[in-house]
Image (tube, rainbow, N blue to C red; front, side, top):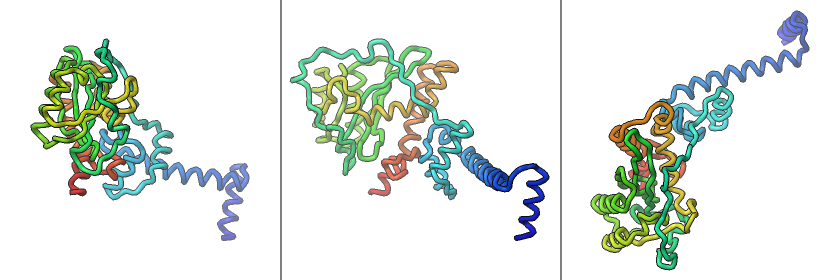
Length: 282
């Protein structure tokens, strides 16, 4: 120990620094080396997880690979070395939020009331329509999400934003799943207040719930899903580097929804994908 201290003293004398400075710099060097090692581990993740998963999700993906790294370290190292998660951007096509003038007393109430969880599958559903820009114009995606496991039960795409798209989605839902008696929640868009759609709901035995006017948080789960699609599918990259054709966009969205249902982990589901969550709870 004395010999080691002597060597440190000699080094400090040669470098012209104080002993505390020497130990401070040595500790910083060790910390930097650990950060570099963590950076390499983070960069080993597949591009989908590296670009779009948050620090906590990255920690879970690494844990599944047998590597334990605290999410706080991942966040600090990512920020230091400029590895940032893609942010969400909102762009609206002209007239997207125009709705029919209806007497609010005639519309369904907000029965869901922001209770975004369900104890059983196919009991609480949320639906909405979002939009994607293509070389051929706007593509509209209509989807239904199950609040039990956040699974996308069905979806339809169209080049028209109309009641027919919402009705086709509902018919698809009823063909694939036994949902009679389920609660299905939407906003007060014209597609969901239309008499055709509301009559179809009654015919299928579904209970309709609607967000309060102008309150997007009442349907936050499906809004969050659409944001996830646009960020993690690479859609925003197409806005920067060249739009896809209508068919290419259909394929991009279909592929991502399949990935979302079967592989993408979520904190709400105990870091499971919707499919794995359902299998574990079966």
